[in-house]
Structures are given as structure tokens and as C-alpha cells.
Amino acid sequence: MSDEHERFAFPDLTPFLYGDLGTLAKVQEEYNKEVERAADELRSDELSPTYLDFYHRKLEIYRTKYYNFHSLSEFEQEVLELKQFLCKFDIPFRISVRLKNYIGFIEKVRTFIYDGLDPFSINDELGVRVIVGSNPHDNEASIKEVYDLANNVISFFVLKKGYVLVMPSPQNSLGFDPDKFPQLFVPKESLILPEYQLYVKDYFAQPKKRGYQALHIVLMNPQGLTVEIQVRSFSSHYHAEFVATHQMHKDERYTNHPDLTDAEKEKLEVVNVHYDPEKVKLGSYYSKDGNTLDFTGLSEPIQDPFKNFFIS
Image 1 (cartoon, rainbow, N blue to C red):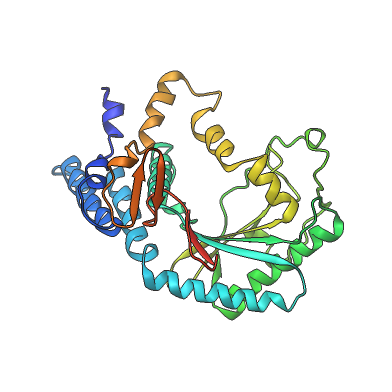
Image 2 (image 1 turned 180 degrees about the vertical axis):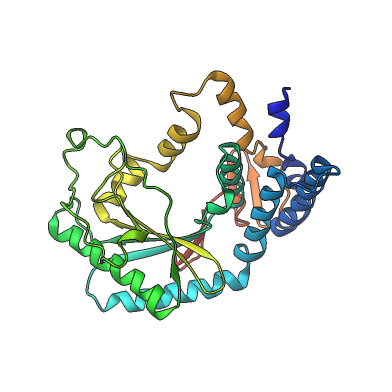
């Protein structure tokens, strides 16, 4: 293995998944100790931080601040209040909330480190998705409803709950060809309120390459937790889930990029967590013959009976 491969040799998570530690929280705690130990060894006598220090710190914040009953219960209560607030505008909508699952979060942090990006710029540990309306095809009226509801969502969190808008990363909307997606409605301009526009990625006015459309907003609550909010129309949600899928986006961004050499693709594999689901020993987790019931939030979505909150 080359020195470059060694540099990205993240500590193996699988012994902790297979180690009968009881809970995912315990796996997270013990794995973080191993990452910290590995970082100490790499630093040797030097006090300069390593990529493993950033890895450890980001996972520790996730474990203590996000994967935390009190944080989640308080946030879910605010989302229930948001639903009540939005009902008075007489615009049909539905809301779901998710905490990024552990495996997916680890892989995203590793990808950022591998790509030389700041893992602390990851801000979608908590996510809210608002789907507006029920029209199978968008038009000027349905898109206006999306913007109206998005403006009210932002106002609710900023004015009523004391959240702060966070400046987003650059918008990824290059390469959209309207001739390939004639069914998509693209508004002439954004209807986000002027005071909020700098903080909103508007993929309705500037769709992504595969025709993905949504509004993306990042907010930080008074306790320092960041939340990414996606607002979609019914039509754009269907397109995102069944046409311009999230998996396509991940494959295109991280594995199938045409500019990567075979060696770079091979090195990129280190961001993935490789494990046998049937060997995992965790409470509220069961996997056999390809059927997995994961109520721990390790890698599978879980959702409560009232469909208010899920881990994905």
C-alpha cells in the first residue's frame, strides 16, 4: 500500500459493529476512542493536528449533540409547532424530519476529508423536508405556493425560534439543459424575500444538471445545531426521488466522475464503510438473509408510527 493510501487508512469500524457492544451509542463512543488513539500515534511528538483529529471531532459532535434524545425531542417539538404555524396559510403541505444515519454520516465526513474539504462545513446532520401542493406538473401558481411557504418556514425559525441563517456552500447547478426536461417549469426569477435570498440555494430558478429542483436553506439553532431545510413542490419531489435520484447524485459526484483515473477511484473506495450487515450485533437491529430491521439508526431508515421523525 502506498504512503498516500496509508494517509487515508481510517480506523476500521467493523470490529466495533461486530463486538456486541449493545447499542449504537456505545459503538460510536468506542470507535471515537480508537480514532483518537490513531490520531495520537500519527502526531507522534508533533502538536500539529492530522486529518484524523478533524474526523474524531466531527464524529464526536454528531454523537453528543445530534444523536441525543433531548436534542431530537426538542427539535421535533419545534417541527410540530411549525406544522401548526403553516396550516393557517391554507397551502397543502407535508413535513418529514430526519437525522442522518451513522454509516452515511461517516462516509460523508470521510469523503470531505479525502477531497480536501472542511468536514465542519457539513451541516445536514438534521434535515427537514417540506413538500408543497399536490399538482403533478408545476406552473406559476404552484411554484408561488412553494416560495410563499418557504418564506414562512424561514420566518418561523428565525423570528419565532431564534435560529440564525447560515451562508450556504456554492450552488451546484451547472449544466442544466431545458431541452432535456421540457416538462419542468422554471420560474423567471426567485420569489424568496430579498432579505433571505443570500441564504437560499434556489434550484427552482436554477435547476441542477439532472433537472433537480428545490429550495435549500441552512439554519443554526440557539444550541448550535445546524439544520438543512429542503422545500419541494409535489412535482419536483417526484422528479427528485424517481428521476434525478440522490443515489445518481452520489454516484456522479463520488464514484463515476469521468475525470478520475482508476487509481483515484480505487483510493476513493476508502470513504466507504465495508461490513456484513448479518454480523452486526446491536440491540434493536436484526439482519438475516438480506432482510434488515434497523431501529438503531446505523444505516437503514427508521420512522415513528406518527410519521413525524425518521432516521435516514
